Length: 360
Image (cartoon, rainbow, N blue to C red; front, side, top):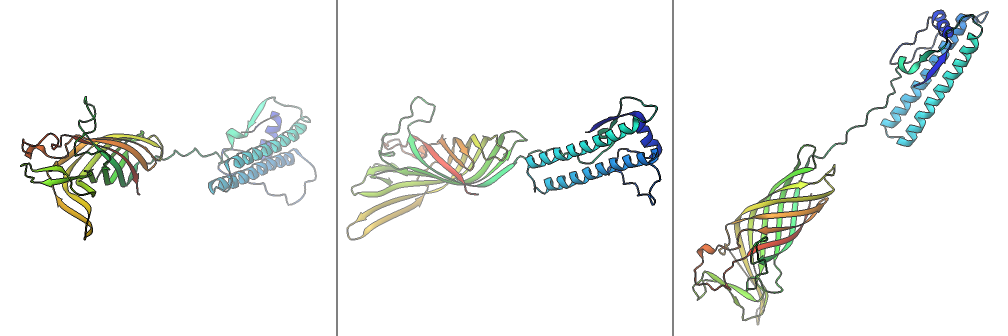
């Protein structure tokens, strides 16, 4: 906004003699037509017309320059710093030109008999140049994150669930020392933001495979002891002896992620539930005359029909690390005969430490 104070009689002469009127408008006033013949004398009318033309020309030039600058900003052809510096230069140039016109008017007014002091001509209030800076756009929040998640981890068979008085690693054949048990999962997930808050709700569905490593022990079915199954030491050296149980699972979690795009640090906690699809027992050993032998057997293996538990994750971008605790026992003890020894009974729970990555 440029404020110019001139003597009142000058303004009266400009407006009365030239008939020029500066009102609020979307475009600068037009230049007055050039006279067909040069005036014989520099009268009050010609002076008023000349000053009116000077004001109109200054504003017109300023408007064109500012319009060009706004186009550069919209096209991103100029940086914010350069645009701000250019805007100040154009405003200063307009102010200098109006001050020069003011000096001309004051010199003219000095020759007049009457004047009124301190009448303010405020161009900023009476002339809309249509160059007001636009308000900054609100930053958009990402509302949905969908994709496929791969889970890889290791598990331990604990003698009691987390939070009880005892959670030592079970020492029987079911969890031998040096065993490499694992957890593998593949899920399709959908994560949605709750309003404009940092809270997200995550749901999904997928498959989880829990693999139990028995070391140098064999999982036998219908053994002579009368039990439905049990683990016994192998009389040959085993390369692999494990059991994989696969479940269809549905995880549900509440996620805290304050980043605008959902790519920052996140913390999630929730639960999961699933139903058994089946399992596979695998034994690998070397036999004289046969070489490497691999035996795969499919079945339910008295596994628990349902899986359920809690899990928590700490993540960054598409990666997380976490832990989960199953509250279902891996095997269904209801169908086991009571004469099984305590070393054979699978009275433990599965706990997993894992890492995930969102593939897409």
